[in-house]
Amino acid sequence: MATRQHTPEQILEAIHDRAATTPKKTVITNAEIRQRVDYVCRCMSNRAGVRLLMSCLLGKLHNPGVDPRKPYTEIGGNDSFSGRTYDERFLTTFINQHRLPVNPTTAFLTPTLRNIDHALTTDRELIGRPRDLYKKTLQLLEDVAENRIAADLVFVETVRVLLQVRDEKLNRIASLLHTLERTEGALPLSSEAIVSLIGQHLACKNASRLPVLIVAAAYHVAGSRLAESMLPLTSHNAADLQTGSIGDVEICLVGDDAVVTAYEMKLKRVAFADIDAAVTKIARAPNRINNYLFVTTDNIDPKVAEYAASFYEETGGTEIAILDCMGFLRHFLHLFHRVRLDYLNAYQSLVLNEPDSAVSQSLKEAFLALRQAAESGE
Image (spheres, rainbow, N blue to C red):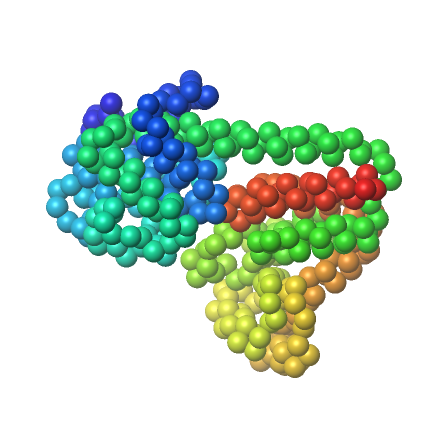
């Protein structure tokens, strides 16, 4: 299908067009290979496998002379290539454009796949979970390398299944939103009912991103009233050193991009070491920060809170404090009582728009189901 005359972008769009024309019909006749592709595409607990597969297939289609099992230039030889380059330079745009249910960032920086200097052959096990995901991914790369199946067929099938998964997810969300519409016109939830609803959501599994959204939703609704605005949220998995951010949520004065308040979220107790790290960030910040606030879902240690407050003079007037997450939410909703429904809608929008790697599909569906139950009085 592809030669050097085709750019990676052209290859990707051609693959998408072929997959979209037969959304319900497989292009692979071999049942074992088809089942392997389906497993890798639908493994929701780890999305690195499918992104690795796509990167290697793209490299093979762009340059048929490479071995898809050698996506590391450190391996050496004329048949190795940089899978990370194909991943970051071309796949990211393709994935975002078609809203494919794949990790938003490269697979090659995950612990399992970074710092490898050997071919990804089936006789060498990758250390990662689930084991079957990596086993089946390597088997698919071997299938292509050994010419048991063409790379373009595996790629078309991969994109076809991903489009199916995407549409299945969108349809479930649409159905839940439609059910939620039936409660419109009823008495709006009270502030305390909203606190209870979001507390239930926060108690769900894998909810580490939610405290960020709880605070972010508050500034979406009340920012203009406070003459403050929020900088765009950074990736859930990105470290502050990578993004250059000071906190998880950063607040500026309207018309300025200098951070005046930074929030850092913790799903555990804030420790003395966290305060020391915050003081270092404050000292390195290009502008003076007025407030550095920890928001925790755990108990607050009075000694740590006192330690945090002791840095006010040392930092030249920056207050460091520790807030209880649900206490913050309760106070905000009562302070801005008349826009409590706007807050709930803003929180819902943020939850639904987060990538699945930050807020899983099940966590999104859980919120809509919890809200429907709360508003219908069930």
